[in-house]
Image (cartoon, rainbow, N blue to C red; front, side, top):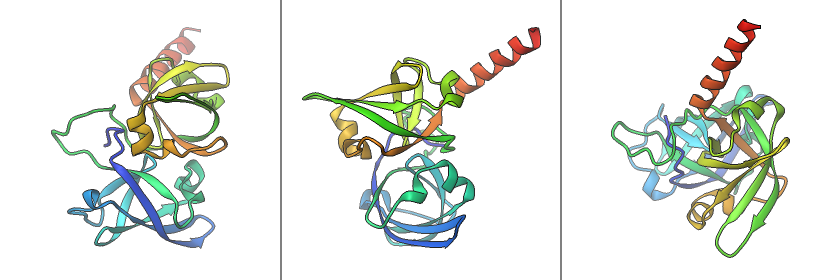
Length: 203
């Protein structure tokens, strides 16, 4: 499990495309996040839970299969690109964001940026199959960041980002057209699905 509080950024330093539906890449982690790493441990890359397959100091290798490549933005990364990093939560850790599984359900594009001297508002396209789960003031995971949803329109939604988030995560350098990983809040999804199922049964 993860909390949606990005702890730092890692850099892709090697990439091996083994087939159309399988690749490996190596991430150089910040020193503060590279302690006591073990093969088999989970680390979120842009919000996607990946398993460490090889460790060499602060460098860790991950394998990405078809489902991960199709659902996330990780397959588009090149050497030199960065990813938001969060190590798996431990029992007793403070939950600063909201509980997240690291299971990405879709990608969406950044479509508009509103900026002022102190913060930014980022607008994203709202995939039709996720509309029921994206609610004003609800939670959403975007590239591994636990964020509160601002305004929701028919085909888009926004989040408001403070300087700390812009500095610590990739959102400070994101541009219009970039693809962002989406994880829907599990509690919201469970409630919405349950209500929809009950209403279907009644009709």
